[in-house]
Length: 319
Image (cartoon, rainbow, N blue to C red):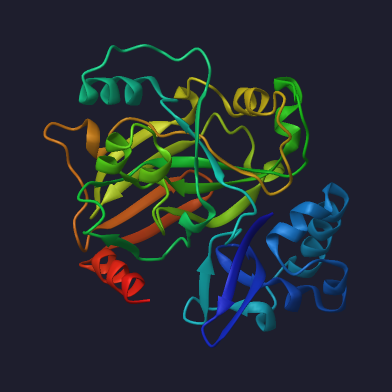
């Protein structure tokens, strides 16, 4: 299945959609009376487990076989796509330095020794950082002057567990999505840790769809790329990961319970702005397109906002 979370232009209620032949279908409308069997949100669907997923998949095949039902079609002009899970219950878990070439460019930019990590480098992004696949990214110039981009494959856990073996790890995956790990490099380096520089509002667009694990196939055989204003900045293959998706899940779940709906961002390949000579950070109006083969494209435009932090501080002081 290829699933999406969307709302109608004039109705803010979030709805589940399914994409067939590049056409978004309103899932409750498509399934008709059967829709009462299923929850209304992506997170609730994930939590219901594999039996419910299989039942939904079977019904979609029955209802959408042949010509797609006109009554369930949603035109692009009618819909707003949201992040598949607009507000995760927990932080998005991310990996740093999971591609050798990116590790090398990062070490060079920081004047450090190149050393391949022996274990995954984990950090997190706050749930408030999550944004939609076509949302504008607000760049508060009072907070950061170095907005960078990072194309990544996202993994959504479907079956929870602890101490999961790498042999069984992919069986715990509900599906895959696209993530851009936007980063405020000056905050990231100035705070001596990564959380703040990675967690500004809107700095984690996710989407446009979730492709379920059975349809997506091997996560280590997918092309990943990123363009800024049409110019390719990152182009790689997930086979180049230092730690595969299965190994990431194995390491992360050691002594730590993973739960349905947990989101993992698996690291970025080389080509980020920080690693370029001179560094290339994003500017007001830049269009960033993040793509993973077999899933789709995020299209996020950078929109500069000046003075917001100063105004917020003044308002707080007046209270």
